[in-house]
Image 1 (cartoon, helix red, strand yellow):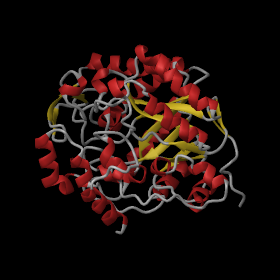
Image 2 (cartoon, helix red, strand yellow):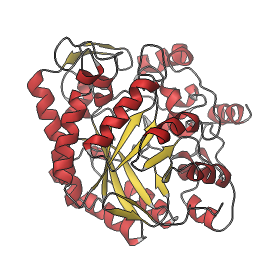
Image 3 (cartoon, helix red, strand yellow):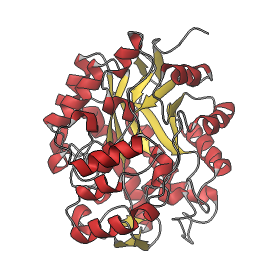
Length: 404
């Protein structure tokens, strides 16, 4: 079968030059919660490297949605810097997308400026902090904030927005019975748990109009007992199709419960703690990190079996994400009627991976030691092969994980 990889394809009003997307993996490159030259340089390198569209990750729609000090916060003041980034991406022929969302309970007052909010009140051991359930008016206002973020994305030169409705962040916290214990119209049945998502989509679609593509990242499973399983996830995906999503990114996992279900492999705990500033958190993770962040075996295209189920029941374009590092698997995904493939770690290791594929290379050299993941939460996203300053103890950890 002839490969579709380097053929153009549409997402709503947007046409991409090929079927590849740089997935929204957190960069940690936004000092002061604003775009930096480092962010520009990275996404420009991926655009120059042949990608169809590159996605700026994890932009919060409000300050209360920030998880990290070096996370992007989408607001009026940063539009000129955002426009510099999108201009650089467009100059290399790629489209520009921005993932917008809210972290919900995955924050701390020292970062987001208030007691973290969620679907329900509780305690988040990962911050650690108490969490406050949102009031009804706050839910309505938050949905409007998503719509306002789409207008800001347009001003910043974006071609598409990706609504983050997965991975245990705010929309996902409303969807999942694990985090949503509300007794009002936003809790209980799946229809009620989808109500906030519906309000967000109404605001987003109204703001997007006819010139911004609307993509939604959604879970196929939460990845643990008591979370969303594939039956409910499929109903959520069908509803997103009804609401007018132009494409879905099919993912899975829950950062506060099953983080490595999202990315697969092992978290390099030594790397993670080496870069931490908070001494008590550093020692806590050193002692209990392997229990808090259990490993999930990596295999190439690890979400594909679940994603095929969604392909059978949905008509809109689907974007496959999860463990793609070879031309063989990329073509297999596209030949199973997925319109696009999305990658992150391969493009952290090799920003020009798409051009390499076009030149005949068959495989990325990424070995999934996950150093980039362990590092990015405190500093920035970077592959260990691009660094010369890694301590010997971390080098040993990388080698051990690569040789598994």
